[in-house]
Length: 111
Image (cartoon, rainbow, N blue to C red; front, side, top):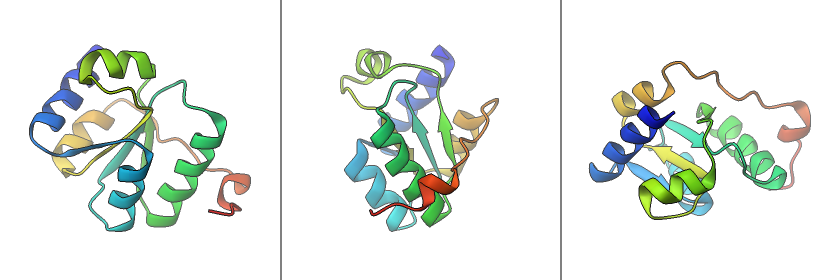
């Protein structure tokens, strides 16, 4: 998944990346998020929350298959949730990844 981190780094340099739960939620709410990407080791609570947000606002959610520490190494910020705000970058980052499905439990949240 190192190639994915290269794309994520390019997104950040282009100003098309939001890092962290609060900024990702805002990008989903205001319609600027084209895709949301998560680390493979985010907490169950954070996973449920981001599934709910993505489902509510119609944004695809993908797991990158890398850890938060890998993200920290590449971007200098430890985070488990990122949103890409450019359709082309989002499509390239999502290539070969399956969307993370939201279960009925995830959608019945008190967010």
